[in-house]
Length: 228
Image (cartoon, rainbow, N blue to C red; front, side, top):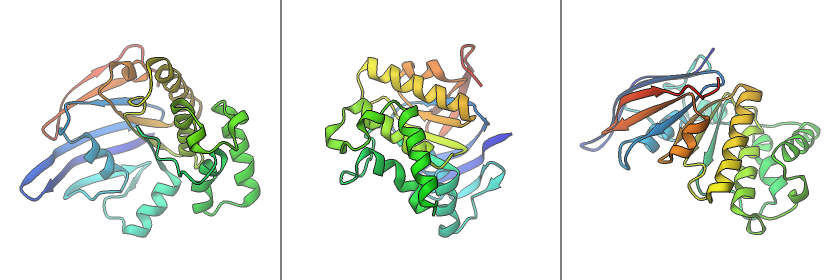
């Protein structure tokens, strides 16, 4: 099944063209690294796929649903149910504990209290933080915060995870641990992942790389050691 389909996507800010007809697809469980120089349009592409920004033209489909023409309510519902984002700087809510940060998307989506509690317990254990469930973000290391962010992303059982420099704020050993976790959850739950990165380290867990420049995908490479 195709988890993500992007076709002829264009986006400009005033006279500046940022996306110049991007097309790409990801199968269920496939991981792709999106690489390219700063200003090439990578983050804008992620924002359009996540429904945070609107493209000028072109189509985006997630798990067969065309989201390009969704209104704001439908986009919010899509983000709550099918798409999750992992950021370089974690973006945890500072006044909530690790456990409460993971609960938050499920509460927004209207999950029953018992279902939320069961899912949090499962995820906290899966990311290896059951001993840190009540810790506040400022009490956690960078690697622990990213594990919380990944658990939060997984909470809604998304079809697609968008990761923006997921290891960019971590040391190399912690970065490796986070990549192993992303690879594991992608394989286990068949979640497609599009990972924006400048790091060759990240490509280790990917099935292919996509090279962007000036708002276009100018090349791609299949990676023999990727898993899908």
